[in-house]
Image (tube, rainbow, N blue to C red; front, side, top):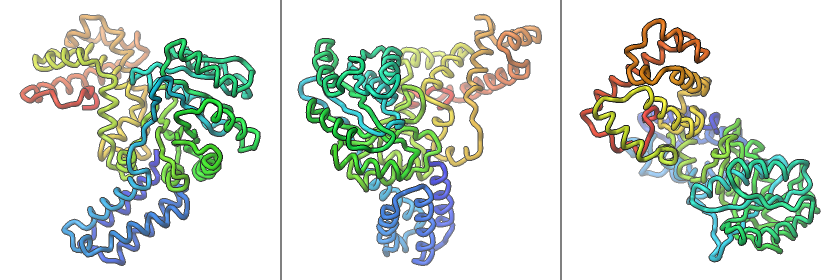
Length: 441
């Protein structure tokens, strides 16, 4: 996510920190590089120009130029301006005083509305809400079936009336939600390959009929300024409440994320960061600014860990660690928790200082699958006491897991190193990891 922009900004800041003293000249040169990096990331020209101008006004002040660490001061100014550009504060979804809360999704075809509808339902489930998905896209082939399959996969009811009137479907779904005790209705409306009057009129009629508490514009984060221009037109007709940027795990340059709030005045509320239904994040401007500047995002990382960690298991593991009884079953359990948090690359990029080291490095998630296969090919006795693993046993495990004996040996060496590290830490408290799985902590 935004790797190219992050890389270019980091290079600029590195040079700034290298100057013993900052002058208006070297600040001016650095700001030109920042503006060029923003434009290459497909940020709106006017937004980039205003952004750099605001930084310049603050950076050439006497306080910065005479600061002991002027380079760091400029980085802080850029961070503060990025947070402001991205929206300033975290925007949440409004809730109805009397359920159900009605959330209407709008956007062009191919933006990922249907998948996001299911992701949002899954997100709300974790917040102890009971959502219902509504198939109001009656035009795209298999759209209704796709939503039903997604709903079934997360055990969320889907309301549909086939190829009926979308306005009628949306209105009838509210009564259906009340009958099924659902507190949130998510309307998946139809999109088009491009904006047309007929589509807009239908969306306006749905809005006027059901009076949604929240309208979210769903845009493909990889389309850059096209997404911003489309959002502007939707805002003029629908006056939506917030933006969702999908596919932000791809080669998105960042232009949409950095421009859309300034152009439309509407905040980004969610981003899609993967293909799985759990790959959705509430948008936090301060955390995104930190990621863009290569500072990681520890808060989101800890939140992800806390979502997947079983507290009882964590307490049980802590006791084992204190007694130095950590075995391969515990190791496997920790790996499975890490997998639930998302891809290894996305996790590593949230750790401060690591993201910039991953450029051109292939992070292979299949390695975790191989480790699981190796451990699952062991007997209970072997998992509890790896010391009994002689040559013939290791060969059997390699055959059973479809790996090589060298892979088994490598895993056992890594496990042994981890046990030694745990013994060294045993004198300290294991609390304070925020529920972080050991592989991450």
